[in-house]
Length: 540
Image (cartoon, rainbow, N blue to C red; front, top):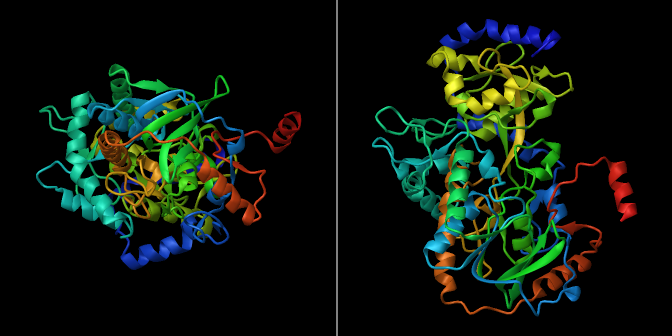
């Protein structure tokens, strides 16, 4: 529970609740939003980006943390690798066991392919599992894929790739139907119609949910289906390099984290679905992402010759937990604001319309704390603002927080905080990789026989993603990649396994005077203190 100065400020916020309920807060004008983003969004902060010196996007600016893993040598020394044998020979190799990977595997098998799924941790250990708010799909009479399209384009700052957005919104209703057929338990009214709510940047209620663990419900549904269909899965085996021949992808090298052995897979087609990169902690932000989200897929595809788009923009979710310290950075779902919870500064006043797009709300919170000095300082020295969650029960009736946000409620109950009774402290947290590897509407990349699906790809969301479109993205493009890769594999002759692209990449690195000490992919983040890390290196 809160104490001292924090409790005093909380009482001040509670005292303004009745007054705030009578007020309307105007949305930002386009000019106000542009200025707010330019002044306070982390993407615009000077000195945080670096131009990539090698590869297909040479000269493009990306966050320094991305530049570090792109300008790095492979974990594999091509000259030391025996590629005369392989351990698996499949039609479709799916790298990644999250929502996109499982959806791809299911559709690939449905289209007659022999499929292998390789995942870094356990099947289902992914950002998909941690998504909370819901999944968009325009399936109501007052909605349409066209209206959804306009929302997505507007939310992305009008930078989105139109063909990718079109595929996303047109597949939306089909994706919802498919998930329900597989057994996903959506929230429904007593008559069986689906409950749908607003998300930030949406003009129509189209957010389908499963309480506040929508991603968990979706992931478990897909994971169980993969298991039930007996699709072969290798766990704890991240991909550390792709294999190519004459510019075509021919498979991948995996590394078994348990046995410390390399596993060679020959594949007619390969789908990268390795998720995001929150564990890079861009600009030092905490993250909502799972432990394995280290941007591996971008590194592997880029090294093989794929271009990236919008990799210079990161989504910071406006409401990451700011207190208690044990859960700093963990997601506080946008569904809270969709249900009416308000953002309040230390004086008890609202300062932004809560359902603006995420980039705008994040920027407004940062402005409130850093520029206006109206944030609340926690005992650990971090800043935050109040999210007035008790307002949800006031607006919708007692027990709404309990019924609609049970996972959130339990998360805070562990620390003796009842979010249905008292506000909670929040601050932006690194949440989503807006950009990624460039794809077409079937998830194909520039490298033949190589596909990318889900958060590793870029283009569909432009420079900012709307709530609920990530779960739709992973299923939509996972399905599309799986179907197309399976059909294509029927006409692909298995290729030779080489690391020629890695040799060329290493030559570029040397020509740019980049030292070989830095290697990627990262695989797992290292949270040891500097002195312990240095000691470990000495021992090795």
